[in-house]
Length: 294
Image (tube, rainbow, N blue to C red):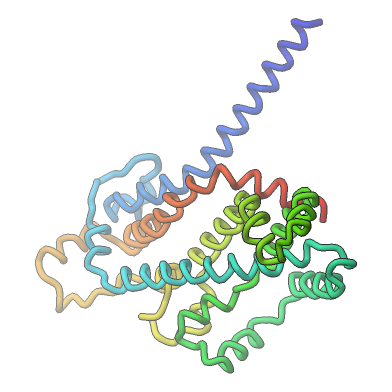
């Protein structure tokens, strides 16, 4: 019986390892394929012969990116957008989730605000009202339109609120007995204990704002104001052949829209690939503890 259970356990573990490897490959292969296409010759890519390794290895696409001032301008706009949005979202979510984590006895309007949040999460005002609001606030062609347009993610508020509700209430009660006020409790006790869930919403915010492209297409009327993903969405390798030198013309023979766009997409993924490992250890814990006890 013991040997039979041991065999079943080994089989179960083997299936788990196989499943995890499949999921890992499903996540890695698109990134690897994008890199391979960006390093391959245009004719080979167009013929559909590129799969697991570059063919006709060339750095022409990356050389073109280095010469593209708008790419770096859009990259910098995205960096600013993520920076400001992360700070604003962090404090807005923190300040809204803390009172909502209380009971109706401690915070009387709690149920009203909760129903309001849930309603806003389920029913969107729509694209036209959103645009009219941005226009009335003077946020057209402004980075603040991109930052403030999604400054209160309701899902993140609920996640943080549930995390707060799982913290021992005795900590807050003892702090009140020692004379601590709400700000002291929040910043000195609650926040240090909530690093897993706060790191989780930081990841959500960074990824969401870095990858979002549609809002800029609505409120930016000039291409030079596009963040990186919107720029990549719109870009094409339109080159004035009368204004290029011999070296640039040579590179164009090995580069196509597909290889150039693959290179830009891969470069745009690098910041997220660098940032995520620093938050990964908090991510699972924050999601798990913040998803229960609603």
